[in-house]
Length: 266
Image (cartoon, rainbow, N blue to C red; front, side, top):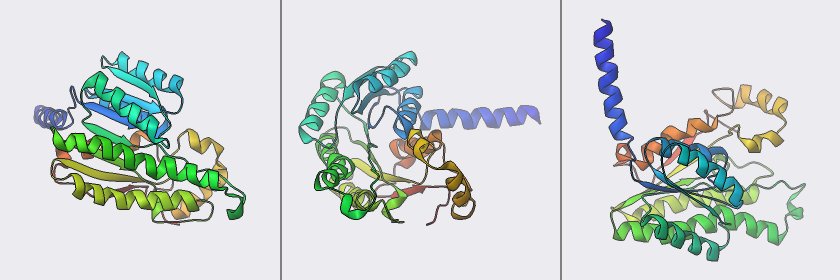
């Protein structure tokens, strides 16, 4: 019996290794220096990918690049504000100059500022939220998606939020932008198909560095009734969806929005 289980485990393990093999692929992840972005960078690198890691702070990117290097893969750390198109253009140029291609783009960077009331949201703050959460992913997808479509194809993964479909007070600009990302996902899937697949991961509450500012007692109390799994997610729990959408396992999946939220409801 044990030998049979061993054969099954080895057989399945071998198949999975092939399906989730990203050897020599190049993955560009925005917001890749922490939280969900860092978890995805390391997951791809662990499976053979080289990485372009970008966020606003260069030193944070370099620390993750060192982790990728320790796995025997190459990494480009690049500081970039994805709300500024001139910086995005330079990022794309740098990525292609270093690696010659991008196989997977993960639009993960985001910002959801706190504000005391709606009228306190300044035009400058509103524009920053739109820039990072919507304008940036659009521009990066346009530049890289066109190159993918003209070349060997690829995959684009947008990262949205359950705020897109479960809007709540104090997340109005952010939720509106993420709803736009959901819409953009399907639009881009048609624009770049059939050579490029475009999908979206829609996370719920994850216990990353951002959650350190939460009132955890209040959160845990709400989770008991508002989240089917009765807890927040851990960063590595987003990895499986990213690998699926980026690799051959997701070959017939495009234009999809996949909720990873523990069964959250408002």
